[in-house]
Image 1 (cartoon, rainbow, N blue to C red):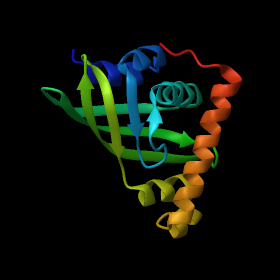
Image 2: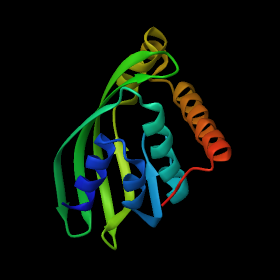
Image 3: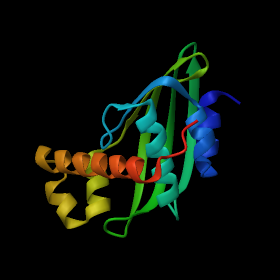
Length: 156
């Protein structure tokens, strides 16, 4: 099993410790909500999301690795905690590997489509606006910082 399959298999099992162990000590992560996280932040983010995702279901496919680059597609299905709305998020992931670990991880998804599912009509009308995306990003960053301060997350 390669490192990307190991990561997503652990994600399916809600095993954040194994997910964290898949990252290089100097890892960076970015997606449409969490931008430019360092290694400690990305590890804490996965722990936070796994612990909060009571009904989280994950499917992954199309894992591909060529030398030190990889990619995968995955679908996360969950209830968005803030609004209690169901989200089915289709994500394309790109990876750069170093020392057989995830060094750079970038997840791509349609923010407007996600916002429509997560926030309903408000997301439909505001999800394409920069100020709304900025607000969601800041709220998410604040939530992560609070999680890290309160729980002192277990980071491998």
